[in-house]
Each structure stands twice: as structure tokens, then as C-alpha cells.
Image (tube, rainbow, N blue to C red; front, side):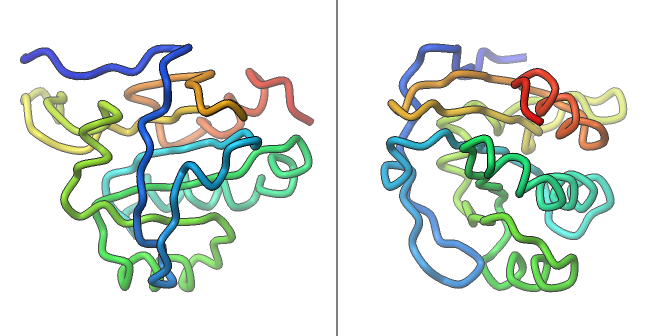
Length: 158
């Protein structure tokens, strides 16, 4: 496997401006002063990604009460994200990165193992960005199921 970017705790979070499921521009810099959970997932409306998005959405009040915003990023179009959010009644902010530029910059796109083969794709990853815009947590190759509960426990929320 080739060497890829891996963000570390303490690194500045790479800034981005992406389109959300409502067609509006969202910039990470707008969240300065707030803790933000940024998670990357492969594809809207697939079983694992749906489970993960629903887990974040169901825990949004707990996360929000602890001062966290949640941004989910995938290569899907804003239109597909809008359908996904509506179908699953998601309350989190979903962002579209069709060119995979942000995914790549955060180390969430590249070579990964898939059923024993090395493939190029989205690496399911979750980051916590502190109020100063620095990486407070960097987790690559996370599991879709149980991940949100583990994150809440590790962050000592609730």
C-alpha cells in the first residue's frame, strides 16, 4: 500500500467548504469556537452508512448538549444526501464531496482492504475537531455499528 495522509491529534483540521443536502455551502471555519465531530462514510443509503448516520442522528441531542456539532461527509451528490436524510429522518448535517478532495485531504480516501483485496475507496473515519480548529481525535477504519456509542463513551459524554 502507498503512504497516505493520516491526521494526528494536535494537527490543524484542514478547512473545507462543501454543499449540504439543502444545497447550501457549509464551511468548517464557521464552527470555530465549537467542538465538531466530522465523519466520513462511503455511500448514503447503504446498510452500514445508514446505521452510522441513524446512530449519530439519534444521539444528536446528547452530543449537542455536550457541545458537539456533527458533520457527515461522503462523495454522494447533495440531491442523494437530501433523499437519504428525508428517508431516514436524519437530523445531522450531511455534506457532499463528489471530487473526494476533502476526503483525500483528511486521509479518508485511498487504499483500503475490501474483502481481502486492496481497493481505492472511502475509509470510514471519524474526527473530533476542538473549538480552536485542531484535531482532538482521529480514528480511521472505524466500524459502522457501535461506533457512535464508543465515541460517546470515550468522550465521556452523557
